[in-house]
Image 1 (cartoon, rainbow, N blue to C red):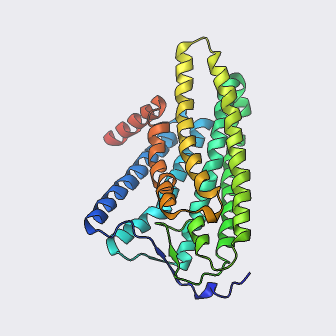
Image 2: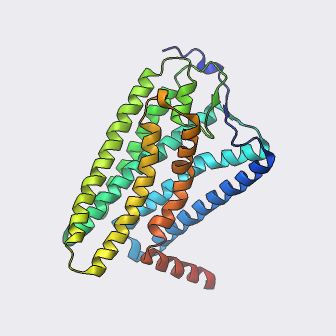
Image 3: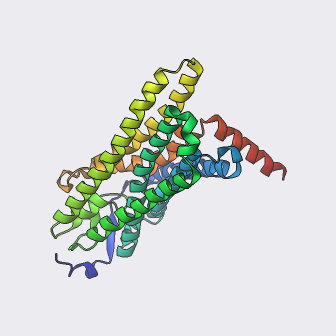
Length: 311
């Protein structure tokens, strides 16, 4: 593979979200509000779980990991987007693009695995409630969570290193609002066969495994819920699982669309819209869908905020 031109590349250039000044200001305000809402929502969940002893369970431990990822993912991309709006400087350095891509792929890959892990946790809780504390011990949950983060880092290292050992001959204009794998690979003037092959293989293995674990878990969960004698118990179980399924469908659908296709199928306009969902919108929605509707989390938040107010 020819890597001679890599050292020549100093900057990449992003696509403009809008060349109209009045629209640019509106978009800046909207994206800033979404980002601040994301930080506030996920920060509130982390604070509630960290300060309430009753929320020190595997389910909420995994939720806190999800909130961390939902802070990391937009933090990698949104500040640069906001900077572009203010300065109209659409450039990002080669090193900056590498860092941005690495952390984005890391966050996405880790979250895919974490959502599957959370589905398994709900399966054990609903289908084997008497054995739940024995099976999902603190040691095991810590190992499982650590495993998702380590796998996400390794996955990202592979994709990032393969992408940035390619040759980029110009004009290096990324058809995206941030550095993502498909638009970066689309810029290369050397063969992208190996990075594409690895991307499709890894996306297929990780994506299909996560989907399979989630699907099998929910087949057992739904069959168990339907056999519950208590209507209240069924409603509570369906509420928890319905929230998780909503998050899973939003995130899996958009990420599979982006990473589960060959680069030849890359469509800048469609992909820019889809990437806004998993990179910006979904991290904001997750706390609202999954946690802030939860009575235990709301109770812990009210208690924590009350204590801070009078301390």
